[in-house]
Picture (cartoon, protein in one colour):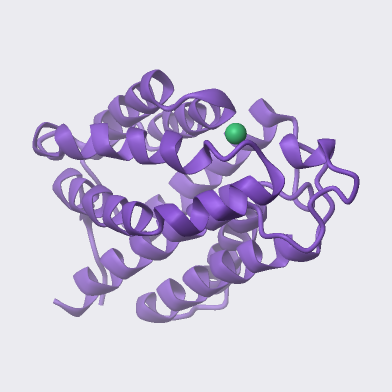
Length: 216
Ligand SMILES: [Mg+2]
């Protein structure tokens, strides 16, 4: 058992993540309007749309170069803080797997961990602040634990996906420390953080793509 995630696979993942983000536009915008200014979905959707346009080109690259290119595109296309955060995350991920043509399970874990560290440092935020970190951090922690517990790769994919989704769900009971929800009297309590939700879409889709590769 094992898998190798190539640049081409990552480009395929981008297309699938875009589909999921795209089809949940109304839902994510509704979440954002409850606590923020309602532009999160259109920003991130625009970023992924641009990535899909360039997917063929991106898919030809070694994965480390591809991650760097994705970071530059996200930084340029996605507006607001999300653009800077996603851009920084991808640039950090590219650095963490520098020179690699493709990623194995440990490589994917390293990539996600580098993204998490970049987002935390750039956003000066941590778990519990009601942000995308509340989906990504539990996913990274679960990934590391599952690897050290000797779980199989299909099991790891399920565990990481579940952690990302549960993490996003947990933002409902959090008071915001970062982002526009902090301007509200109740700090967004009772509402999901849209950034955590779209993060969980991405992690879940990536894990689905990897799981398909293992089964081949
Ligand atoms: Mg906004």
